[in-house]
Structures are given as structure tokens and as C-alpha cells.
Length: 273
View (cartoon, rainbow, N blue to C red):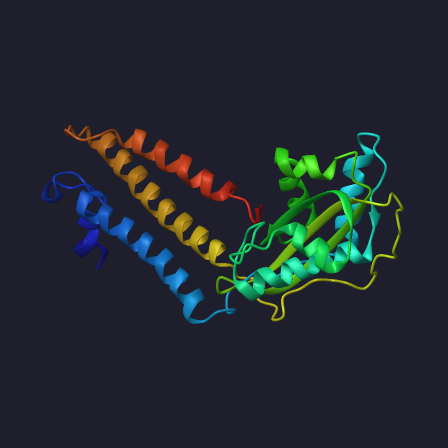
């Protein structure tokens, strides 16, 4: 059976010493299949919202602790948890889900400062950090600290209080956890500490941990590994038989695909804004 179809996988005289699956028409087909897979997954999230998504172990307390750990490294005073600011952060997360957007300003023109005011918090200075699609607090904090603007909020010496919103929902057809950090200093200069919640463990409503990003990542990895394998076999047989042909170097093709494969493997979860 394999012998009948071996010309698809192995270089032979009848396929001009190039496996059919490595010839331009089939490579174009592989690319088309990869793009169709991405389109299918995206369409599926629209047609069946909430089926795919992320499960998160992020909690309010973990964010508070890790935010203050970053400040303590620079000798800064810890931020005090404030329930009014947290109501503002939670309202912002809920608004993003309700109006299906991912930005500091809503499609209706509502800015972060509008949420501060709606919650009844009067500030002298304020800031906002956003995150989504992260599984754990550590990777989310690392992403924030690697971003100059987000890091500037976390280590801003002017801020005294923090509010945190960690809310589950469906955004763009995908289950996710939105995290909102609201930083501020009270206008009257009086810091009012609140007791942070101790029982918030955020998880998706349905314990589904398959994300559309992960599906595309795995599919891409399998496809690239398959093509790299074909190229390795092609190179081995070509060198063994000392076949001469006027085509590009298989070694360079392998190197290029290996780089793409490593980029896929190293691609990170989550997004910040």
C-alpha cells in the first residue's frame, strides 16, 4: 500500500526527485488548510459562543500580593486594597463583556475615569491595567512588568490604593477571564483600607480549558513537524543517492520551518492592554 503512494513522500525519478507533498501545489494546499483551520475555529466561536475558552486560577488576593511584591522590590509603599476602587474595576470588566470590546475606552466613549466616578471614587491621580486569557497570575504579572506602560502603573509612587476586578464571561465568542487593575490616590488624601476578599477563586463557568489559540497552535505545530519530517527524509535520500536537482536547499527550508516551529512553541498565552 505504501509503495503505491510512496511517490507522495519520497523523492523518485517519476516525481522529478521531489516528493509530491513537497512540490509547490501541495505546499500551497498545506497553507490553505492551515488558514482554513484558523477561519473555522474563528467562525465556530461566533456560531457557538462560549464553547471554547480559558480556565483561570487567577484570584484577587494573588494579584494584590504580586503587585505589592513588585513595588517592594523598589522600596515603594504597598498599595492598599479599596472596595470602592474594586467596584469600579469590576464594573469596567462587566462593561467590556456586555458591550463586547477590549480597550480602555468603550465603543460608547466611556473612559476608565467614568468608572471611577460612577463608583463614587474621587481621585487626584489614577490608572488602569487590563489583561485577558491568562491561566495564572504569575504569567499575567510577568506580561505587565515586561510592558513599560503597565509597569509604570504598578510601580507608580503616587498611587496609594488599588481596586481589582476578576470577572468571567464571553468576549468575542470565547470564554475568558478579564482582569482589571484600578490604581489611584484619593483626592482628600485619606486612604481607606478595605479587607480584600478571601474566597474568590476565578474559574470559567464551564471547566473548558481548550482555547482557540491553543487549537491553532497545536494544528500548526503538527503541520510544520510533518513538513519538516518530509524535508529531512527528502534530504537524506537525495544525499544518499547523490541526486542533483535545480531546486532550493532542503537544509535552508528545514531551518526556516524550524524557526517558525519554535516561535509557535514559545508563543505565550494571554493579552494585556
